[in-house]
Image (cartoon, rainbow, N blue to C red; front, side, top):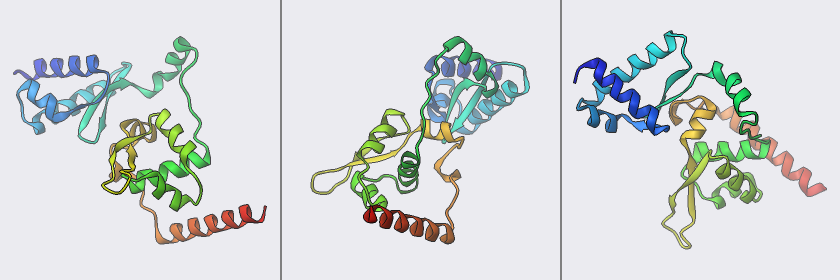
Length: 189
């Protein structure tokens, strides 16, 4: 297939799907290898980003998605009037970070780390689409395992989990001290 035709096919698929599509699936459709297909997608992204247009391609792990450029959001807000927004409290952020770094993880494991119940936080994060059930642990009771979603990657502006910052041993110790201080405060109350 000629390059311009292949790009047109990729563009139409990504536009129609409205969600991310794996490079491997796209390659099969245009009958190219993954490397060539990814090159075409990156060329398309560069073209969108260099022109004054409202869309771009976002790379998420081994997938691509067509989406609106960030500087167009104010216009979308005007048309939508009430954009979907969610507020991540400290509790939700703490729970989300535990899941992001330890996934797949059960509620019980999250509660052991946090020291308090996490039912509400996990339910809200599922509702926001930032985490999802990724399976069940092979253990008595077969507890649910949770992991992050592509929405998590989009929301935090990373292509993959490998891009998450690594915690230094000093930061880990500081977090432990803060958690112990919080636990002692809640016991004193």
